[in-house]
Amino acid sequence: MEHLRIALQKSGRLHEDSIRLLKDCGIDMNLSQRLKSSALNFPLEIFFLRDDDIPQYLEENIIDLGIVGENLILEKERKLKIKEKLGFGRCRLSIAVPKNSDYQTIEDLSEKCIATSYPNILKKFLDKQQIQADIHTISGAVEIAPGIGLSDAICDLVSSGGTLFINGLREIETILKSEALLVASQNIKFPRKSLAERLYFRIQAVKRARNNKYVMLNVSNKYLENILNFLSGEKSPTVLPLADPNWTAVHAVIEEKNLWNSIERLKAYGAQDLLVLPIKKMIP
Ligand code: ATP
Ligand code: ZN
Image (cartoon, rainbow, N blue to C red; front, side, top):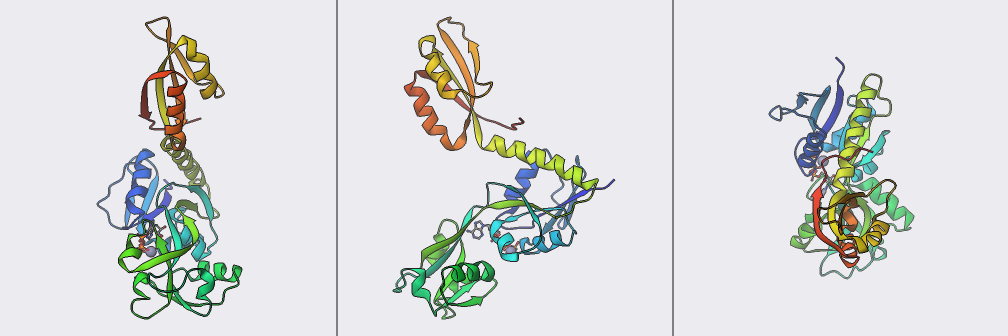
């Protein structure tokens, strides 16, 4: 039987969340295999690779799907398709300078040297800003470059900023915001194509579920209309009678990012006894 082939990062920042996404899609796998594992309940082979190799393997059709950072996709400029933003692996690509230097803006880096592992993205950014600077490409430990006299500034990935701080650096410009992406080879052939569609469907159901919460509340009938106006969707919310005929229960799905604002509004409109539950899967 033909198997769909997906590549995940072997170890590193995207590894755990990528495995968790597949697990939430109902895919069981044996994680003791180091390079390649077959899913136990879906025709899927999982390859564990360095993230840097994944874009090329996709372009060459060695694998069908991969999970990598948007930063890497933009840097590698390979021919492939972006299928989904996955909501994890969030970081930014930023320019940073030594804390005590005079540099305040990127204009101050004109004719200076910037060390990075992202020369393509950086060059495009500098060209657009019409800044001439020397790009020094290094593959790792970029944050130590200014300290050892290799460069005046760096362009590197940042999430909390802790690494910059430890290395005496200060961020002056963000040039890209990134998160993990599901990417696909440009021509996945049948029957792997239909397996990929099945996986996309599951990933979308998981993503939707992660972005929403299920809220249950009780409301006195005299305030019910306020609550229904606030929550009105196409068919929902669910409206249920309670043992006390003067009271009604309302159940609705609420976007995670507005959750606390929505709860405050619901309370103000008269909602009581609120329960907020996670959703496992959400299928339209
Ligand atoms: P590999 O051994 O696979 O080449 P790596 O060292 O290139 O690993 P990681 O540091 O694990 O990669 O980062 C993988 C991806 O995680 C990055 O490309 C980026 O998309 C994302 N990421 C999220 N936060 C950060 C961060 N603070 N620093 C670096 N990458 C981050
Ligand atoms: Zn890498």
